Image (cartoon, rainbow, N blue to C red; front, top):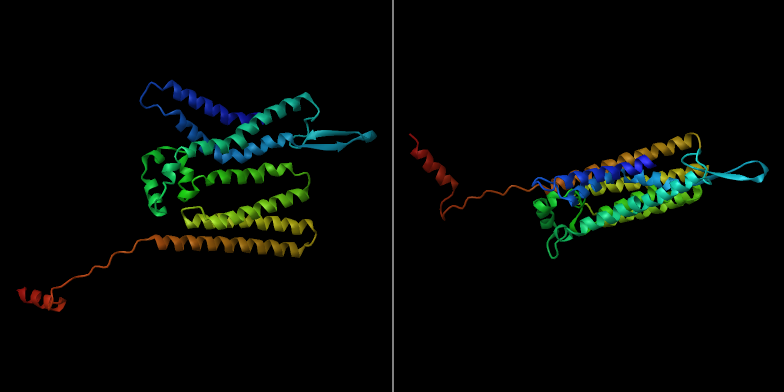
Length: 297
């Protein structure tokens, strides 16, 4: 916990100190750009760090002799939840919860909110805005805006929703006490996010929207398959057959997403203009050919 949670913060502090040391030079990188780059890299490991932090609050109870019980940390059975070491660890984990699962989405919103007028200019056509954003030097120089460039203008903050969705499936699920609550929670989140992805279609590239729909469907199918296994409705050859059907459904969904992406790409290819010749009245291309043949030696 200490290593995984502090390493990103140490890297941020080192980068800010290096930027401050070179502040007198014209080549120094502004501090807010360093923060944007750090947040872009943090996006890749945020669910892993946040899950490890949230696991610090989850203890398992074990019954011993004389009707007594002890509680140990689920992630590390060597830590007693009644010890002083665990109290210090929960204090550190509470601080990291504010920094990572809560602070990272809020920080991303604050950084993107400054560029909302460039990411989604009012009273302008969507396709024109998408093309104009590619040529905007201010957006190109900000690492954090690369996330918003993937989305249509009115969904410029959709990456925050993606952060929250990933945190719900990796961290919030730890609040469930048993398998039944976990299954219901994951199924509800998977269905809600699937509906949101299908109804909004937030990505500029339709292939990416189709691919994300496939990923959401995979989560739903996986939860349904676990329900079938836990209810003992399938066993032996039936379980193998259902697994094969789910694999086939994933392959078909992936092929459909690929087909939709190729179709959208073909639809965006501009057609070459048709070249037409306007001849004077009473003169056509046959007369021009005869005149040209007469002039040859």
